[in-house]
Length: 584
Image (cartoon, rainbow, N blue to C red; front, side):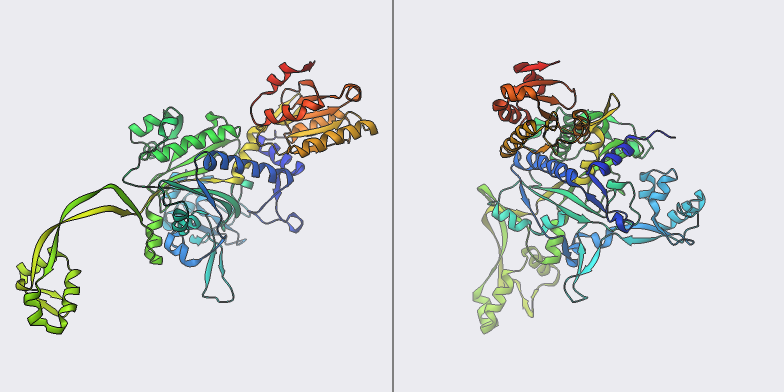
């Protein structure tokens, strides 16, 4: 029997202990949909809240929430209707449909090679490699593009087209003006949205990695393109990034190049300081979730691999056995693409006005109407002539005089004697511009999955999920040593006290104490508090560490304060052991 991979073991724990499982199992399940169970819901929320602390609270950014169903016009403007398509093939025999590029990648091609292929080249390559249906071995029909957005109608009118959003970003771009005004018109500004997204994947596989409905974390950072410098770059310039460079990918080389943020910027490998800043932040965020630095990389996207809105992009990937490198976040420089498109399609001015510290004086050519000649010739139409001339381009007027001897303003022929072109000094108090955008975007379920994967440990043939203590779904387990009434009553009292103090606590009196410890370890509970016979004598309990299995004894009175310091990261288990009586 083949040895189980870590992925198989994590999937087993996830189903058995209530982290996640395939949705609608009683009806046979539907690929691409995942139910997040009781423990998974808490863990996922804790990861998202840790993101909020790192990327919102500490950076002073703002969070909004917009609707999942979006008017079709929004995604026409954003370019998704035109570009959000994937190549699909259908089996002639069983009629199952598959993503053509994924089939070719499973046949040995790289995503760099398949991303560049058009439908004709995909068809030729499938035939050349003899790729068959993985379900029945049948041949495929010619490939075609499939729009991977869920389409719907809003209300009872079929023309009122809408889509399930494939990203949360467009909700940020369409509401940007309101948020910017509410934030007292300050730039730079970061706006975050954490919510559900829908992608009508052709043939989703790999469990939580590729879903049709998932939680996306989109951060859009708006800044002045005339001032692209990152004010916080010094905080991360010495951080080491593990990069797979686009220029190497072109030569088929996927080796990792290690360099600091400062080196990557100085060499022009990362084109924008804010992009580099968020990449460094993302690396450290994953380290805090338990993913080692050497199991992460940032792979640069080639031009034809990038999304239509991106001028430079890196995918943050994590290595998993059996699946290889898996994307958990994408980092893109979106420039002013989105706001410019929404300005064009909506007609709303989304530019920002920035006032200069001091006015800038410039000389401008001005068309000055001469009423002494305009009045007698145009009489009661003089006002309309003056109005048209106020909108005229002075250079255009001069060129018309040179080339034709007159300038046509609407229905009026203007001669050189009707105007004077003069230079006037004008004070410019500010400028209008469209902000540029850097986007870090994370998949919440993917973060959940890689966190579980890298927390998996085996000690003395027992499974442990060594989840970081600040995100563990259950913080403390309270056990009576045996199911005796006086011990149970005392344990329930401690359980309620810790609940009142705000801890996530579980009470368990079933089975032997050893089995209860084992179960707590397997779901990642960092600390177990045990009430025993000595507790009834001196009001002390034992506190057991999940990872080391070491224990110390502490008075019930001091327990809440010690727990609070531990879970806030103000003390370690080893430091607590040094303060109290260690049990060998």
